[in-house]
Amino acid sequence: MSADATFEDGAAKPLRLVAMDEDDLKVLSALCQDAVFPSTEMQWQRGKKRFGILLNRFRWEDIPFAERGGRKPERVQSVLAVETVERVASQGVPRGDADTILSVLSVTFEADETSGGALILTLAGDGAIRLQVSELEVALRDVTKPYAAVSGKVPDHPV
Image (tube, rainbow, N blue to C red; front, side):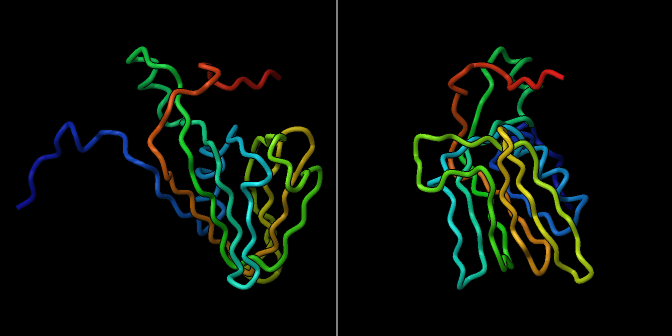
């Protein structure tokens, strides 16, 4: 017999998500929107066919709770890991510049005639990272405790 859920069961826990199809990727993309990182926090392990970024992710999932609790918006460090990466290309991304901060707008997938395609990270300021993959497998995992967003504000995207 199972026990009833407790209030603590609903407490915020680190995210651990995997996207294996385009519907999954839409959720992951929404959670990565407005994540920021210096270009020095990207790494492609060619031999392992793995690409990763250490992001400072805005916690969109926490906004209703933060507003209700009177807390400031939060960020958390997260690893975005992409498997089966065959090639990496970028546009408007200065390599090795720790002072330039990049911001994720979206993560999308363009399928090809095989089970693979291109995973595209669209960045603010016309930048993009294109990962050619043999199949879609993307993981997002929080690796630190949340911290108050330095700006104290929710990112805004005026139309």
